Amino acid sequence: MRLAALQAALVSAATGRDAPDAALFASVRAHRNASADERLAAYRANIKGAHLQALDQAYPVLREVLGPCYWRQLLEAELPFFGSPSPDLNAYGDFTPELLREAQRQRPELRDLPYLEALATLEWQVHRARFAADDAVFHWDAFATLPGDVQASARLLRSNALAVLQLDYPVDHIWRSHNGHDAGEDDNTGESYCCVHRSGRFDVGVTRLDREEFEMLQSLGSTPIGELSGAGTDALAQQLFVWIQRGWITGFEVDD
Image (tube, rainbow, N blue to C red; front, top):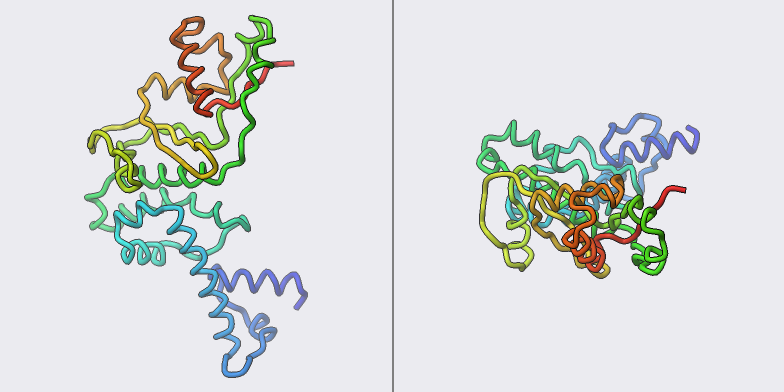
């Protein structure tokens, strides 16, 4: 068995994607009191444990809401195998909102918690923001030297850590209450708009938005400043200034 094929077979068996084949068993020697199957099982247990721990860290609020035992049982039952396309386990887990949506269709005990998918969506963006690449600081001097018509045609760039979300349920208050913040109004129904943002290296927050703020933040990067709602008004200028100060807007680009 060639080395590359052996490595691929070992990864597939260790993640649980495929059952070990005869060629792989023949290449894994028994050691002391451990058979080849037991040695492969040790790899599987280590990989499974690392991936479950990564999901625990990415979704701590979901884990609390469902209870640690049920959360672990759900993951083990619903995930066909444990493996990540990225060597960075911080990038593992974006599938969880879809996993919960499917689980709710099949598990009656989850139907009284219709907000789980929305909560998972929010938590994943919080997790992603925590590990997003650092941003440059907004270059005020460079922007100020642009002619007025070029400023109007420029597009503002959002922070790498920023996520603007439209959610079916207002789960941001659940997230805040589980993270020691003021939960705000406890409204359990209706869609909501919120912004996930990072201040400092790992301090991530969630801010409720109104629809106008949501649509404006969502349009940044694709809509020139001069075409934003309220363009040319002091209110828009003040709003953009606040977002730049908060680090939500970190740069701009102009057409060549």
